[in-house]
Image (cartoon, rainbow, N blue to C red; front, side, top):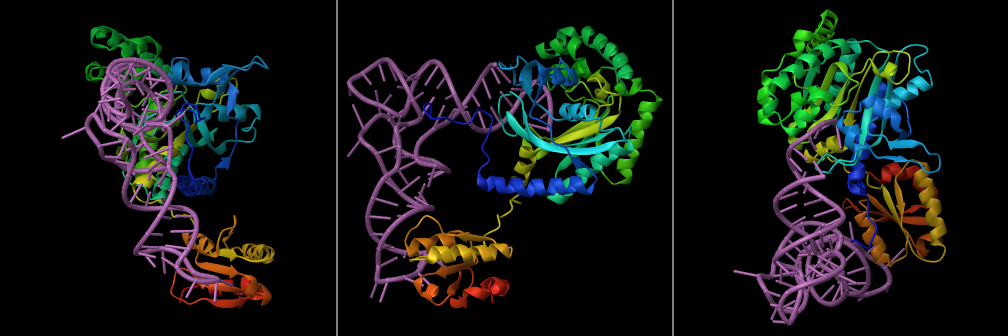
Length: 424
RNA sequence: GUGACCGUAGCUCAAAGGUAGAGUCCCGGAUUGUGAUUCCGGUUGUUGUGGGUUCGAGUCCCAUCGGUCACCCCA
């Protein structure tokens, strides 16, 4: 395989069988977003590196080691393949002054790029659908987004997904908490591993969700974020929890859920599927009231989430809910002088009437054409040979039921077709 | 980036240092123009790649590429 070209590591081809699942999934997601009043926005895959460095944060794993960044030789600009969508979305909102007449609900979709070691549910090019509610202070819209997710799992037929919720307060509250947390971690410095020590001053909140038991023992005795929250932050969190409870959406408050991006404040949440192994988070999001100002815009509150297509579609595949692709209604078999032109006319008429028609291409014997007709899954084979051509007719052969074949006039075929495809 | 396991036909897998195989799929045929069943026949390939050990390597060793899972982190 060394001599032949192959796809970049961690960037996968989605072959037709799986792509069929993608199409069904994407239609459902898009439809749901639109029904809830979210409007599509499409941003470029490439942005100035500075956007992500500022928005996501210098001390995050994404910026430290996962971005596809390069200097464009033609322009001299520092560019990056987007590792996530929120930064681009907010940049676009600021650049086009989208909030000039009030808050906006937006959704986007597409590939994201992170240079990580691939494993199940984690790829270097992966795909997200994201929703962003820009200009809403919440917590009403916080609840709306979470309810939207819950509804989506329902419509997709997914079970076994749980919601984890937390609040990380305002920047000021978090700063005070952070200072005390650092003090606590320093007091137990000997028990920390290399990762925790490195993060101690750059991003101490990240130490909270370490899976290292020794570090967790230190974390267990760490100060509690809830104690640092002011009245407004507490009210926001309580308001959200009440709305979720009233809507019947279950959740677990996870005080160690801090999430990896710097721009979050107050509400953070993750939807987690236990059946996916180590990469179980299928959807994650949170509030980012500071991001607009951070990247040079007029301050505006906002919240959003992104969901992972590969992981969710993987869940759909596991639960045996893979959608069967629509088989053609008819497969057109043709052989003999002048039949190809008639076949195109016939197929065209049926397609114009809204039917799914595959017309044989590539030559081959009559037998092989019939084999293809069967393999296509079509209800009917429409046979057009020289005999039929002379009679301006077509032979209709049902392939999925026991009816014998018969002849139909070409002129009325499309009109009568709904009757013909019915099995008796 | 770290670690473990694994790379043989398009796919699923055999071959325990001695001639590379099976199933499936695909293609052709079984009296004129009729599928899926059955029967007959056919191609499956630089054993991921490059070195090394050996009389001899799919098999052992090294490197490399790729895959899988986990760590890290996240979608």
